[in-house]
Length: 169
Image (cartoon, rainbow, N blue to C red; front, side, top):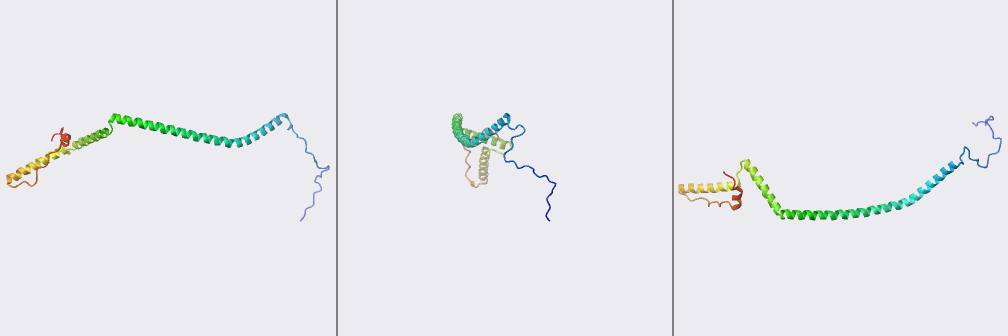
């Protein structure tokens, strides 16, 4: 259903305005104009910054790459110098492989002391026992009138004698 227009509603008594109204409440003051000028400057600066910002960013990236290359080259150079210095110190102080030989000797000595503290016989003591057993077997075979079954075991070499020289049975 259609509604009837309200007759009590106010009807315009004059023609609509065609010209814009003048600013009200002091919006056309010098302070307001300064503020508007500032907004315009900000908009202009942002536009310039966006255009120049990409160029500035690319320049900073390029400078970063150059700095990275320089620092890596310097680090490699210093690393090589340090390695060379350590090699010269190591070679001068130990005479090359002599240090490893000494380290091996120290290790062998400590293992031998640990085994001795556990009651384990040294290589020299075992070789000496083999010789004594062979001698006893010969004497027993000679006393029984038979030929010895095995030839005599060789005596320990100089290195085995040196390792067991300070030990007693």
